[in-house]
Amino acid sequence: MTVTPKKTRLALLLAFTVTPLVLIGTGCGQEDGFAAEPETGSADAVDLRPAVEAAPILPGSLTDVLEISGRLEPRAEVLISSELGGAVEEVRFDKGDRIRKGALLARVGSDLLRVALAEAEAELEGAQLDYTQAKMLVEREASPRQDFLGAEVNLKRFEARVESARLRLARSEIVAPASGVIVQRDIEPGEVLGPGSPVAVLHDNAVLRATIGIPETDIAFFAVGSPAEVSVDAYPDRSFEGRIAYIAPSATSPGRNFQAEVEVANGDGALRSGLIVRTRLQRRAFDDAVVVPRDVLVERDGILHAFVLEDGTADLRTITLGPDEGDRVVITSGLEVGETLITNGHRNLLDGQPVRVVSRAN
Image (tube, rainbow, N blue to C red):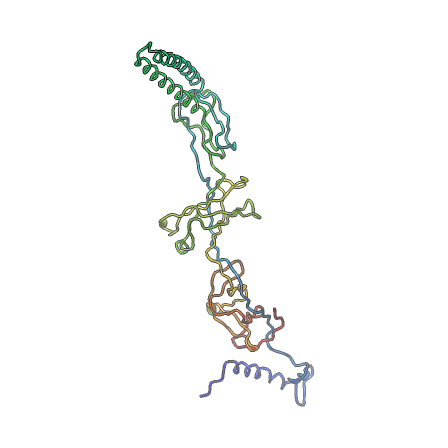
């Protein structure tokens, strides 16, 4: 049995479809309202081939991106406490204030400590005089050496007392351990605090961290230090650069995600703790790849295809998709760079059907 090729069968089908139309308008006894069809070879012949648009497949580039939502948190939350107890003499900050590292926040019990320092300094002056006199007498051999040694020990004791009094006075002045924003104030002037009492809570917002979950299927693409891009709804026309600062050593269960933290510089203070962010992480970059618009693809029986122009006919190709970016997608198999892709008029085409190209991109 002879098998008729697919393209030949389609041409015969079209020929048999056209023939009855031609016969109706020919011969004697033409009915009113019907005119004879032009001959096939005439200038007025009707071209029944579907009109399509086509373009060559050129090498393209695409970045494969993983987008994950997260929540911004301060890089550090510092609980500031009073090391020493005493009455609160002065408070120089309020909730919401932006402060710099080393700024004076409050004084607690400083009045008594200043008095103690003055007393220790006076005792030190006396010890220094005793030491000088004992040294002079020993040099003149007018006093035993053990008197000089006793004066020297006494001098060192009072020097240590002065240093201790100075340290206690310095620590009665509570200073900011880091730059940031005061989010909680726990003291008021006149209160009496015990050692270790909370004074304030400070958020270090110079760098924020977005906590995200990386799926286990993607974890191989990322490491600490990998770049990230962060965006928030509050600033729709702006993005912020970041990097992965931490990846958990084990996945959560259920969900099989690896918790990660993305650090984002916040030099101008635009970002705030608690904002929901979209974090874009780059998996891979494709260069010189087959990248096509998604709308050139057609689905037949649950399988994706694309039509390529071949010898004036539509050649149906089964394709395999790679990563996508917006309305562009990488084709990993089925299409080759240099082939001519049918980009419009392809929805109802048949495999091997002759087509008429009305627009061809270069």
